[in-house]
Length: 148
Image (cartoon, rainbow, N blue to C red):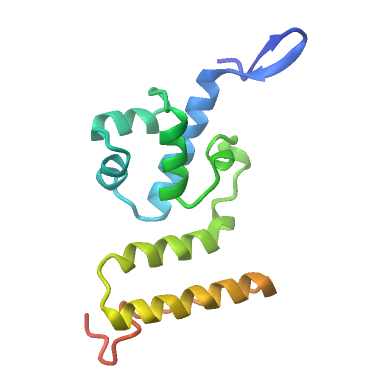
């Protein structure tokens, strides 16, 4: 497969290559964030088989689905369409932390939501200072007993 086709003397990426890159990036980020195929397929309003086709680089994605993929995976649409060899998935750590908290937020109590707001404010402050994120090993750090 050629990476480029030449139109009027200028190199352009082929659709086939972009679909392949998109598929690899979606699968790698989905696995990194621990998001199931079922969750993403449901979010996009498509069957799991169609979503598998996206991950294999066989199914065309319209601009709206590309936008939704970028939101659920906490990356830009540009990142999804880049050469996977040139993307450092580890560099997405701040987005990963936000994604992790967003997923947890769906099942939180009032105390949990207050904790989440504090954590988001901490992330914002750390981004301004360009500091690394601090993680906790507790499943529900806002609870005192933490036996969940």
